[in-house]
Image 1 (spheres, helix red, strand yellow):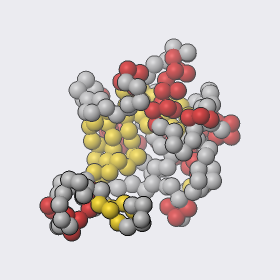
Image 2 (cartoon, rainbow, N blue to C red):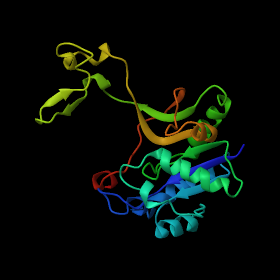
Image 3 (tube, helix red, strand yellow):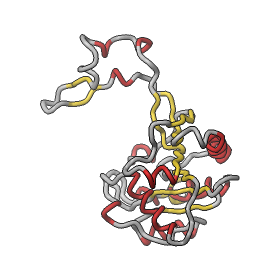
Length: 224
């Protein structure tokens, strides 16, 4: 099968400047995703999607392909994953390369193990015809029913107030189902599904790949 590792690495970052190439364990952050993709037994093409010539050069230096730049209009804070994935697919079509599926490896989750990556890919291949996608998830220590947000008056408002009555937030967590949080370790999506379903990449049949909680670098505090 044609298995593409796609590593998104736009240059814009509000919390940490040039986050995707900031030095982590003596290497640019993006290096760690390229390294684990290169060690995989299944991945046979590694592509970095970036809007930066500097990032492009670093990606190529460490063994990835970066033959094109991502347009600015799909490289902002509010850009969707679908945008850069669909853009990459269309670019690859022009060189007659269409992967069977795409393995998403985000630079902000640098501490991966290639054996676990290959286990996820192998699991996906076995279930290929019965699922839409695979997402790595880890158990969250509290159910989502206990979550609040700040309303316009800056008071706490329960996310599920319309569904439950009373102070349901104070119920024991055992009263609710366990919650699973996508952790960025690995996501796998089908190329055909993305082409045929506008703005949708994961679908309804999402296979969970459960891992321990992972280190995710989004701020200077996370980096330290």
